[in-house]
Image (cartoon, rainbow, N blue to C red; front, side, top):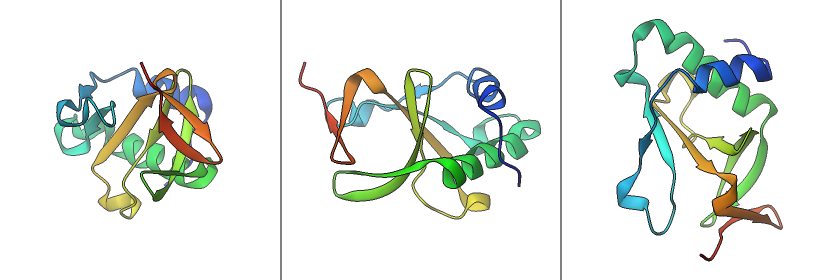
Length: 110
């Protein structure tokens, strides 16, 4: 697996229609894509995107769980921590919905 440039990452995320996570709308609004639901020709890029988050992303907490995050444009991206080749969910949240305080993501009050 290879890491991606910022521009390659932007191109990758713009290829897909992201699914809003309805069950988490109130407590953790975000979107996701599922590797097994996208065209298999993009699976290698999916894994490279995940590898890039793990390689150059930063560590932070959400709901007492430490993870690796990467900010790209107006979103931050994360996975749930499975090995790269086993990861099937890629999540993203709008930076405007959260604030990062003492390396912890906190949902902004509306």
